[in-house]
Length: 214
Image (cartoon, rainbow, N blue to C red; front, side):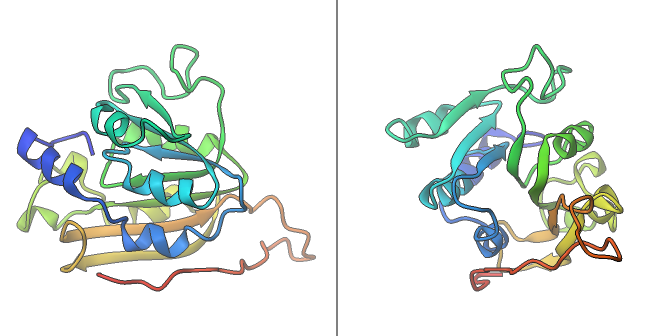
């Protein structure tokens, strides 16, 4: 998580090693060997989940020191890039120029100009896993700046009529990795792939792991 994180808060995030239960729950959805992008990857706790399942993972963050230390001997592709510096994430001047992905993961990070870019970078059938803080969190902890807090239903609005929503939650998580008010989304880019007569996308076989800790 980059925005509104002071050194003490960043250190707190980097100490986290267990993945978010939301990410673990839906990590079984992608086909084996998928290309995964972990946005604002921090210490790489979610990159590890997908690497361990045999996926090709790219982790991007403004500061990659922790990633380099923890993944020096793995196949993780590490990209150091300031996503808020004004260069579009997939622009010709970006290290991710022209790339697309089967899975995009974003946890505890919000920079709204990235939204349309992330959706465009999802391949047909691609999966978006997104979890971050929402309005109301300012009562509990950082982030408190409304620019860094989702509005009610904002993640749903992001994918409405563009992707199939598999799961969505919004509420206070008291026993989460970082307690607070959060929105969590799992959505699939398959509205244009239906072979049904009514053109509605087919339901997914959700091979989920049990939710724990939240």
